Length: 225
Ligand code: CMP
Image (cartoon, rainbow, N blue to C red; front, side, top):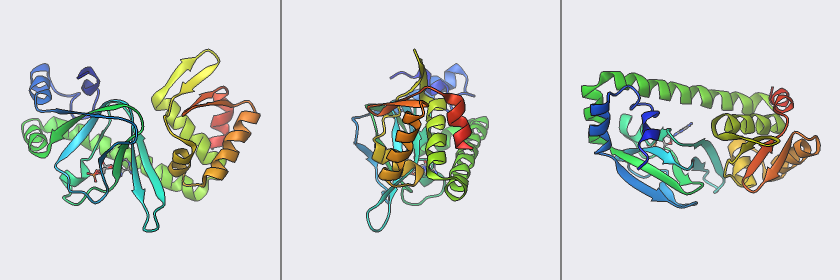
């Protein structure tokens, strides 16, 4: 397992080398291919997961079967902690959107760690606060921004976290289909397609399979406001 990625994860970054090694001995590796679920909304949970490589989408399904995405997470990020801290069924379904490797940590190991290393709790709280902030931003955007604005913002956020320099811009290999991108911004696929086509026509980005290349970051940023 590429445990160096975990060094950056909340919970691990405050640990000294000995504590880090002890904890990594307790991790179990989970390998997933695209489309495979780690767990489903409503399941019982007894462990949380760190993403070592790949990406995971967290989604919910409405009573009439429509899907909505809460977040896309990548290497170094964690999920599945809510069922541990506030015992209740899983709040969302976690599905790999690319080849993904996870490291699972059982509830008992986490509780043991937090008892012996209280400073690790602060890291965890920070990660949870950051997530709440991000969720609040998305909620406000749903109310205050139009669909093209939300698409621009989502692409900039994905670029921030997963972007890599390309010859003519920033390559964002988000791994999402247009349907999934629509689920992430809370709009129909048709409206999101239209927004993307408009951005392409203006020369702000280029579409690739499950990726975009952002050609004009500044214009996209202006459109996201
Ligand atoms: P849990 O309820 O155990 O399983 C589903 C997980 O999805 C949950 O823990 C959180 O880790 C994660 N999750 C729930 N809501 C959000 C959100 N708004 N943003 C990011 N992750 C979330």
